[in-house]
Amino acid sequence: MDDSSDLKLVLPGRPSPLSDGTPEPVRIVLFDFAVMEDFEVGAGLLALLAFPGEAEFEKRWQAAEALCAWQIRETMAGSPMTADVWRQTFPHYAHLSKGEERRWLRTLRRRLKDRMWAARMSLGFFQEALTNEPVSLPAELRNLSLDALSAYVKASERAPTDSTENFEHRVWRASRPVIHLAAALQVVLRRHAEIPDDIGGNYPLDRGDLHREVIALAEAHEPLVARHMGFGKRPIRLIRVRAQN
Image (cartoon, rainbow, N blue to C red):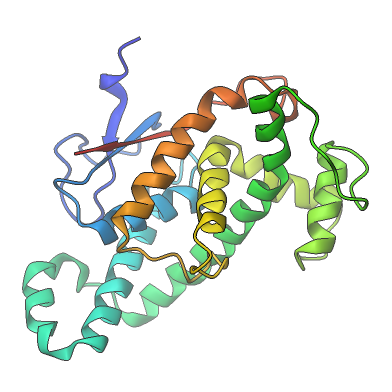
């Protein structure tokens, strides 16, 4: 099937040559490294994880802009001599106030924690789908049911104390369209031990090599979702991500 008609470019703060900016359902998100800065790709990935809903297009866009604005502020603070260059090169991120930036980042980081908890719940499913062998479970985890996984992650990750049912709905169900991407990000963070595993504030937005690694692994995860019943009986309409250039 030719998916080219579904390509959408995540390019926060600039007009997109592939999208007119309307909140259409997204099936494939294309990150063009020839057009986007590395920090824009990183911001787009995190914003997509935090706001994957079909009705969250504007929120996703604004969160990505807030991340880009934050990255530029941090860079200018660390290198004041280059501040004028950054302002002239990326004036479209200057419209966000610090208050708006903090508000969006607070929501984004909270949601990213939910995605990382969902990713941890999913890793056993991905491993079994890949190897066709049952995974070894820790003593505290009796099986790979969503109820058991929710209770296990809540207990081991200092998650909020809402009910297991609420936790499953808020964390797992909301993460399903991007579960392949969330799991890929968590695996990449584990591979790179120099990056603290706190996705809320430590993922380096300017590491293009990491972004490519995450995107490639997310693509490899896509067929595995359909091969394991743990992801649900009904097919998940995944938001697929691709790198270009």
